[in-house]
Image (cartoon, rainbow, N blue to C red):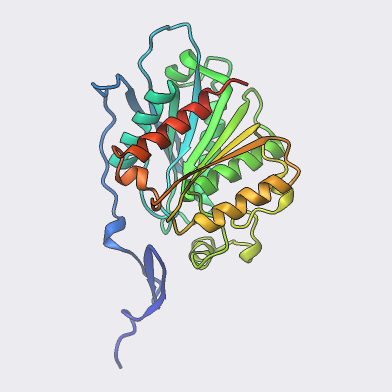
Length: 303
């Protein structure tokens, strides 16, 4: 009999699944990683920290050039995109993007390295990111394990942000903050860049990656009004790209948030004629520079 080992059971945007259960990520999803460094142009320093060994959770921290050692800086907790199955806080794309954000916003950035499918199926991305945010909060008394956070972070100015799948995780963290709280810190705002939510063909991929899913109405995939109403922040910024395949589900999220009864303010920005994560692929283009500027302005907006 002919072997069925190479028969394909499912084919999704980022990987295929064979009938024998093997998962094969497409070659272009393979991650390159670079070490932390001190950026000579901006003066931003970076270092890697271990948050947990079991499960394995780490982060890359970015510290902008310090002009006044007594000044406390806003902190951006960033969740990278990559369809919950590829990319890294340590990749050149995200390393360079976070340098730009930390420099422009004059903010500390903590870029979380969370577990990816298939080695760690969803909900690892959500749970690891929550553990990372709790780790940030553990520094509120200035005696945590990381000196940059102890010395420079303003825990009343915490921001959560991410792109694509990381935007989805950012939303879920904000719901959790609003539901159960995170003592000692104040999440002021959430920034969703080209966020992924349910309502399109990739829903089946998300469901496959999350064996414990609640179906197409899973609140992490399709946020209900009651979750939107309890976002644990004061402001939300959603950044769209006109030609993004996720533009429609992002617009739906924006409209649902506005009618949910949530008491905060939501702002939307769109870049015309651009596609998904264009700012990572073309970081020097005029609209990518504008995206970073909008991100930074949102963080530094006066209350």
